[in-house]
Amino acid sequence: MPASDRPDPIELTRALIRCPSVTPADEGALDVLQAALEALGFACTRLPFGEGAERVDNLYARLGTAAPNFCFAGHTDVVPVGEPAGWTVDPFGAELKDGTLYGRGAADMKGAIAAFVAAVGRFKDAQAADGAGRIPGSISLLITGDEEGDAVNGTVKVLGWLKDRGEVLDDCLVGEPTNPQALGDMIKIGRRGSLTAHLTVHGVQGHTAYPHLADNPVHRLARILVAITREPLDDGSEHFQPTTLQVSTVDVGNPASNVIPGEARATFNVRFSDKHTSESVIAWLHERCAAAMADDGKGGDATYDLNVRVSGESFLTPPGRLAELVRDAVQDVSGTAPEFSTTGGTSDARFIKDHCPVVEFGLIGQTMHKADERMATADIEALTRIYERVLARYFEDA
Image 1 (cartoon, rainbow, N blue to C red):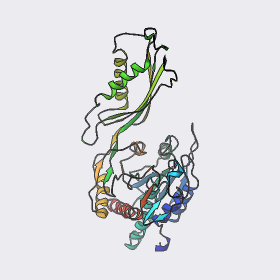
Image 2: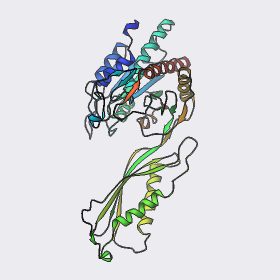
Image 3: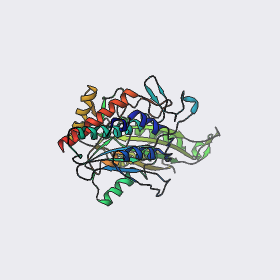
Image 4: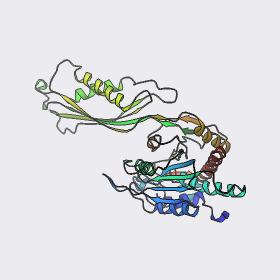
C-alpha cells in the first residue's frame, strides 16, 4: 500500500469526532470507520440490534480467515457534551490547537480506534516489505455504538452473533482509556464487579408531634446506610482493590416540616473485588438491611425494598501471554513498564472475557467525559506504534 493511502491516525480521529455519535445515535461514525477498513481489505458487516431498547448500530470487520483471530474491541458512541458553555471549542469540531486534538471522543475512545486502524495499515506494509505475504491469521474489529449506554444491543449481541456463526475470537485488546497520567502507565487485566442498588424504606406517615403514631422511614434508612458503610466488605486481593460502596443519593421529597414521611429512598453503587460475586454482595446487603431495620427493638410496621441492577461480575485475565505481549509492546514504545491493574469502572471487556482472553490498553483518561475532552496528537501517534508492535509480536508467535 502506498504511504499516501495509509490511514492517518490523527485525521481518522478527527473524522470520527466530527460525527456527533451520542449513544445510541451513530451519525455516520461507523460509515467513516467502515470506509477506512474496507480500504485496508477488511470484510465489514453492519449489525443493527434493537431488541427491548433503542436500535443500536454495530460493526464487525475481519481481515483474513485463518486462525488465530486477534480482535480489537471498542465503541464509537460517546457521552453527551453536557453544558455547551463549558467548552472552549465546538465539541464535535475536532479542532487542533498546539499539538492537541479537542473533541468529544478524543480520549474515549475514537482516538484509540483510529490508532488501531492506522496500526493495521502499517503492519500490513511491514509484512509486505518483509515478503511475508498474508498475515498468518486474522485481525478483526468489534465496534459497538452502545458502550456508553445500557450495553444491551451492542457488544453482547455481536458476540452472540459470532457464536451462532461459529466464529472464534482467540484474543482481544479493548482500546479503553486505561492510563491515568501518561501513556504507558497501566494495562487493565480485569475489572471489579459493579452493581447499583435502589433502597426504599416504607414507614408510616404521621405528625412530628405524635411520633408514637408513626414509623419514621428516614431514621431506619439512616441506620441502614450506617450499617452498610461502617466497615468495608473486604481488604482486596492480589489483583483487586478492596470492595467499595458509595451512596450516590438520598431522597425523601417531603415538603412539610411537621410531617413524618411515609417513604425514604437511597441509591448506592458497589464495586466489588474477586472475593465476592453479585449474589454474595446482595445477600450481605439484605442481611445488613434486615438487622438495621430491627436495630431499635421497637418493632413497627416498616419494611424495605432493595432493587438491584448488576452491571457485571468481577473478572481477571491472569498475567500471561496476552498481557505480557501488550506490556512488552508498551514498554518498547513508551519506555515505561505499565502496571497491571483492575481499577476503574466497567467496560465491554466484561462480556468479551466469556469468549477469549482480554486485556485493555488505550489513551490517557484524564479528560474523558469532561468538557474540552482532548488528547495530545503525539499520544495518538505513540499509541499507533504500540498497537503496531502488538500485532507484530502477536503474529510472530502465531
